Each structure stands twice: as C-alpha cells, then as structure tokens.
Image (tube, rainbow, N blue to C red; front, side, top):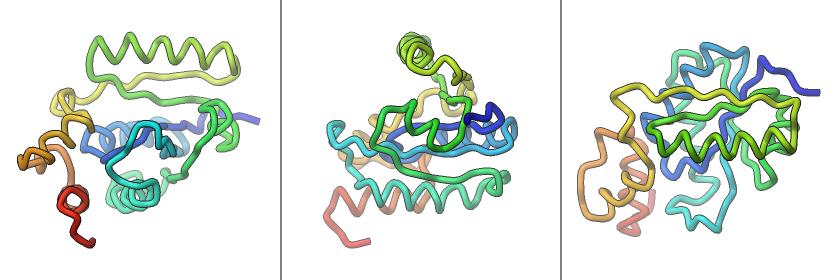
Length: 168
C-alpha cells in the first residue's frame, strides 16, 4: 500500500550537498514524512562508500528544521520497489536546470509505466543551489579547491579525508 503523503527522495548523495539538504527539508515541509533513499550503485564508482553516505545523510538531516519527518534508508533495487517498500506514494526529484528536467521527465515516464500508482513531483532547487552538483563538488575537491560553499564542514572533512587517504 502506498501513501502519497509519504515522499521518497532517491539519490546517490556522493556527497550530500546543501542543494540536496534544501530539497529534503522543503519536501519534509510538504509531506507527512520523507524517506531519503541512498542508492547502492557501485556502477557509478562513488567516492564515498554506501555506509559513509548513509551515515552522513543521517547526521546532516538531524540538523534540519523538519528532522522529525525525515528518515534515511538504503536501496539496491529498482526505484519502484524501494518506493513501495518504504510505503511511499510519491517520488521527489530536485531540478536545477532544463537538462535535469529532460532527464527527470524520462525517468518519471518510466516510473509511471512500471507503477502508475506512484506519482512524481519536482522541486525546483533554490536559486542559491542551482549550480551545485555532487560531481562538480568532487572535481573541485580533487583539484584542491574549497568545497565549503557547497557542503557542510562535516561532509567537506569526509570528502577531503577520502581523497587524501586519511582516517576519519
């Protein structure tokens, strides 16, 4: 049974950015509950391991105003199966640009064919986060740049440690 008042926000969150956190908190203001689904997708070659990403998200959402309406889980299944398992009836997707819209409408169409009972909603990224993408954050960090405008100090420390081989 799915409940449209429960939203499911999927992603790899490698790493979690201020843009992700903005969408999560804004979604939590709209839904009774938001399940943040951390995708286990080794094919993408994530910098951070699944457990690191999941734990980091749990810590980051604990500081959000609507933290009591948010939970974090992992999934390595089809998105529709993860959404159903969470009891959610709505998939939440963040949009930064027209390019995101094109990809997300294709994903939404496929989801609709597989699970017509599950709705997709798009939240436009806040203006200050429209240029924030995890892959760009990782590239800046790899080249020694400052990623503090895009991620929390906790996330920045973990990314730097991962890139330099330090223990966290």
